[in-house]
Structures are given as C-alpha cells and as structure tokens.
Image (cartoon, rainbow, N blue to C red; front, side, top):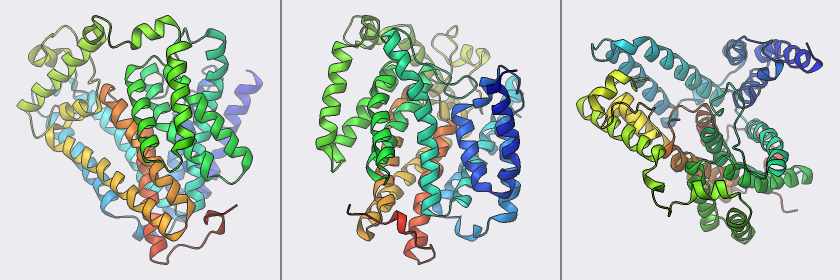
Length: 434
C-alpha cells in the first residue's frame, strides 16, 4: 500500500463525520468524487461505493441541521419531482409488460441509479442557500475538471494529440465521447470564473484552463464534442459583452485545429470526405435512432423503460437488428425509454432552467450583483454544450448534467430570496469596480 493509497482512504473515511455535521461539505465532496472518482487511484484497495457512503451522512445531516426547506420548492424543483415520478411510472409499467420483462432487473437498477442522482440534485438546492456556497460549489466543479485538464496538457504535448483523451475510470466520463461532453459543458465555467473571481491568481488559472480545454476537447476525438465546442464558442461570441476577448481565441482554436492537429484527427473530423457521414459509427447512430422512434410509436406513453436497448427489441424495431447499440442521443434515449411524455417533461425542465437563468442574469445586472450576472449566462452555455453534444451521446442521465441543473435551480432560488429580502447580504458577492 503506497502513501497515496493511505492518503485517499484516510481522507475519504475521515470526511464522513464532516459530511454529517456539515452537509454542505458533503455536497462539495460528493461533487468532486462524482467527477474525479479519486478512489480509483488506490489500486483497487477501496472498493466501497464511495459516492453512496458520502451521500448517506450528508442526507441525514441535511435533515437534522439544514433549515428553510419551505423555500425550496418552486416550479423548477417541482418539474424535477414530476420527471422522477414519470420515470417511476414508466419503470413500474414497463417491468410488468411481457415485451419488456426480460430486462426488468436492469430497468430497476437504472431507476435506482438515476433516482439517487436526482435526490442529490434536490438536496444540493436545499443546502446551497447563500451566494458564497454557490460560488464554492462552482469552484469545486471547476477545480475537479481543472485537475483533468492539467493532467491532459502534458499528455497532449508529449503525444502530439495522436491518442484520445479519456476520463477517470469508473465515472460517467470514462469514455472519450463522454469526456468530450463534460469538457464542453465546463468550458464556459472556466471562462466566466476568469471574469468573476476576485483573486487574480484564480482568474489567471481559470483563463489558462479555458484555453487549455479547447485542445483537450479536440483530442477526445469526439465529433459530437467538436460540434458542441463550436456551438458554445459561437454562442459566447455572439452574446458575450466581452466578445473581443473571445474572437482571437476562436480564431486561434480554428488555426490550431487546421495546422497543428495530427492527420488521424483531421481525417476523423473531416465531414467532407467520402463516406464520412455513412461510416459505421454514423450508421450505428441512425440505426439506434430509428429503433427508438419505432419503439416510441408503439408505446408512446411509457416507452420501453430504462435500458430498453436489448437484442430482443432490436430484432423487432431496428432496421439492422444485428447492430445493437445504446441510444447515442439524449433525445432518442429518453424517447425510447419514457415515451413522448417523458421526453416532453425532460426538455421542458431544461427549457425552464434556461429561461430562469436569463431572469437571474437580468436580476444580477439590475441589482449590481456580480454572481448571478455572470453565472446566469455561464450555466446557459453549459446547457448549450450538453444539448448539442448530447444529441450524439446517450447521456440523458449524466450525473454532471444534474449537477449543472442543481446549480441553475440554486441560482434562481437565491435570486428570489434576495429579491424578497430573505437572503443575508454578502459583501464579497457585490459588483466590484476595481
């Protein structure tokens, strides 16, 4: 057992009492563990479900020590509950249908997995009840991804981008495509923290991570992440008040992609080449999307339930029944698993958050509060990255997506409390003119 193993084990085990007495600390730790999965660095010595071990004392401590839950429930939080109830309804209904009973155990397992993530998202909204706590939560997200980007920079330099970047093992970003999704969602967080943070060292660090994340996204070799990167940067250039800073970055990023990426990368990303849009990867997506649509047409109310991508069902609904894949899209995934109603609720929830973030940003500008003025568009662009990149990835229940969702709900809740005079003043969050 190395010193690193001992340190990680002692730190995680020693943190559990703090999660109980200080639930906000538990939320921060759960967020870091969800992204980095640090127990994987102990050479398999820590096999326990660490996220669950952190969540349990955090939830118990939250019930005992956190007050003000009456201010938690609003329309957006209610939509999360409604979506969870619909997931539960489709799970119960589909596991009793003869057509779907052959994978009922997997359906219930996925329901439990998604339910835990949604519970932690709502718990985060209840615990993060000040501007400063929201700032620390966002910094925990940025710091976790900053570790991944900092590790990737030497790898990219040494290999010249010849090999794909992968996320931490044991997380929902272990695949290169999922890593690209996570980095695309985090890019605007680095950018806005470089503007809103007060410590000059943090600002420079976030600026460095913002610039470094662009080639990191490219070297995941994910075409969906490339489209998400383009969408996020274009949205930021078109809507940001500091677009003069972003335009050179956009130009340099384009030049880097054209001049300094290896031939292998350029070949994969060249959509103009013959067969680029009909290669095995693209055809697999089309096959899965057609399967999802046909299944939803037969079961428009419930879909097939969680994990409804099985060889038995592909033989009934897929154009090519031999090419069995996951959904390869957040939209078609929810459609196949929870029907048109489930997809509608899912998209309505995201749309409600995006609209709420616009209101939060406007409130921050009107009241001269830096955090909502900056965090509103920051989280909106993170959603843009998820919606564009996720169109080609089956990550509808991405834990990082629910973390961003929680941050959005927290921001909206804090603005309402501040407008009602129920939020204690925090001078550190006021707009500064320096």
